[in-house]
Amino acid sequence: MKPIDYITKDIVDETRKVRSEFFELISDHSTDLWNYCKYITGSPWDGEDLYQESIIKAFGLLPQRWSEITDKKHYLFRVATNTWIDLCRKLKREVGLLEELSEPIEDFSSPLLLEEILLSLDSILTPKQLAAFLLVNIFKFSAEEVAGIVQSTPGGVYSSVQRARKKIASFDFTKSKSGLNSQEKNVTIQSYLKAFNNGDLDGMLAIFSVQAQNEAYLGFQEFSKDEMIKGSLRFGLPGHRAQEIILWDKPVIIVLADGDQGPEIHDIQIQEIENGKIVKHKSYFFRKEFILAAAKELGIKAQLKKPPVDWN
Image (cartoon, rainbow, N blue to C red; front, side, top):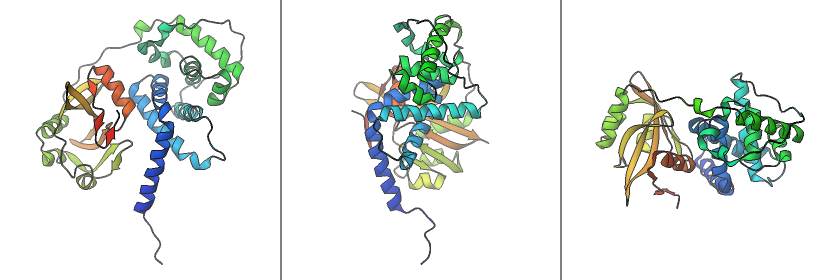
């Protein structure tokens, strides 16, 4: 018998089914996990990348478990924290230690829940300190639970959180933000927008490289222009309008659909360009927490029902 040197459709379909069941099981904690990833990285963009990688790891680690997972939230936050700390180590960033020291109790007041302050904490705390602070104060884990997540001791967690509160109380957050820089319009992006808005599929495909990667996390991945033509673009363009905007300090393309009460965010896209060609196209179409956060940031409603997605 000739050996099978490819992955069969049955395996792909079964994996999709199991993945869907996994996402259904963790859905109650998805928003908290996304916010945690956003705060610990200090950026919605980096947070989204960490969220995606953490979910992939959390799903991929399941076959290695000896027993069932009794606390899904603890499991997810532990995977995300370990993933972030491992990345910081690879980047030669000081991870920090949680030493057990006697610290006076510092009050933690509600003004610290301000979004801009939480997104600035990565500049004054080490990754382990920040993780401990967020897990205790924002996501309400106990010191014992946090000790397991960040691989320390309850006493180390307690001391670190007290020191973090002191440091935060004395930090001037008004100086931590920088303004946006004006950016030159990219010719390739302008060509993409023109083709997209005119429904010109051939014109749009002409600016993709032959080996372009098209990725929509939780939806699909395509690894060539030919796969795109046979897959996600086989029915043509959606008939919506696209425009370039700045979202969280980054230029992106936002795709708007007509809703009952005005425009709604249908998709958010980012392209990587080399030698005048799009070599990677990333869509956030299936990313509920990301799209909802962007909608809030931009003051535009999110499209909640867009087949095959229904977020109602």
